[in-house]
Amino acid sequence: MAMDDVLRANLLSPITLAFVLGMIARLVKSEFALPKDVYAGLSIYLLFGLGLKGGVELAHADAAAIRWPALATLLLGVVTPVSAYLVLRKLGRFTIADSAGIAAHYGSVSAVTYLAATQFAKAAGAEPEGFLPTLLALLETPGITIALAIGAIGTAGPRRIGEVMHEVLTGRTMVLLAGGLCIGALSGERGWEMVGPFYESKGAIFRGALCLFLLEMGVLAGARLGDLRKVGPFLLAFGILMPVVHGALGAWLGTVAGLSVGGATVLAAMAGSASYIAAPPAVRMTLPDANPAYYLTSALAITFPFNILAGIPLYYQIARALAA
Amino acid sequence: MTHVTCRLVTIIAEPVLEDRLTRELASLGARGWTVTDSRGSGSRQLRASDEGAGIRLETIVSEAIAEQIVAHVAAHYFASYAVIAWTTSVDVVRGEKYV
Image (tube, rainbow over all chains, first blue to last red; front, side, top):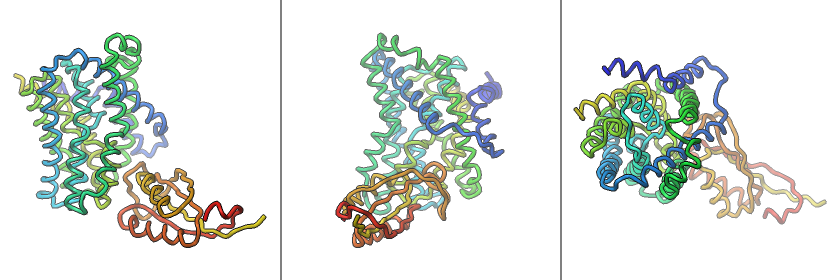
């Protein structure tokens, strides 16, 4: 597929279109929004299903096949928050707190971007490795921790870092994803036969739930669009270019570590994504002087839409070029 | 019934602060509190949470503890967080419960 075919296929997928609809609904000031509890329920379903299936795959994956991708993921978890921090601090001239706060979001990972990338890769015929949810769990924590540590040391000393670690490690994403991985690995194929059809990521229910979730993400992103004026051109460019740099790095490291084109695409999307569930409360607690308008708007209103609309197809093309 | 006059301290804060605030209230001497979800807007329009979501924390304490709580909140939270706090007089029965 040529790039414009890939882009078109992505733009016309129901997942992307649902996201766009959510944004439009918000822009025309529709009263529509997913009820909060439905949104929370969908995210539980998606994360737990992701963990379960990943755990089953992990149980019969070859340890040697995971070792290098896992190392590549941890390396990304260390490099991305530091690179984001340095770019913001040195080039963007942001304060230490703002730079570290934004870097915590870009160092961590967005599970929805991961899911969208997985669906994209599958639709493009490049099935990603089954153990990738394990990598998602690995990438969640280090980025936030490293960026917050930089910020805490740079501002008022490492106060409350224990409280924040607790918050990050016991958050919804970690409990459901890491917990699901353990249950999946322990119960194996036989366990999967019992509950699998409900969670099957290739199945209609899972994709339908993802579609609804993206609809609400569109509403959330649309709500932040008005703040784009406040963040300035530097952050706008950062929110698009930093994911491309991190994504290319992820695709390259993934390819070197032996991942397939699909796997490298998804790892690239993980590296290029910015967290907006685990990172905001952690940043708010540790770095109160970091302006939420900066980190929320860049993660939610710039980087997330960019990745969903154009980033993922771009990472796929990069991964394909690297594999060839 | 005998009424005793106490202070009702009301704090509106960002939801991320709930655990920290209730821990600190306890250590300052509050014997109980009520937390409810709230919505609203103020001088800091953009928060780190859902749009306008907040918590409303109420506790009935003695005059002295009320002053300590407000001073503590002012010193630790007013500068960086979307937090407001005020006190009012309330007449309660079973005054020994609160002070």
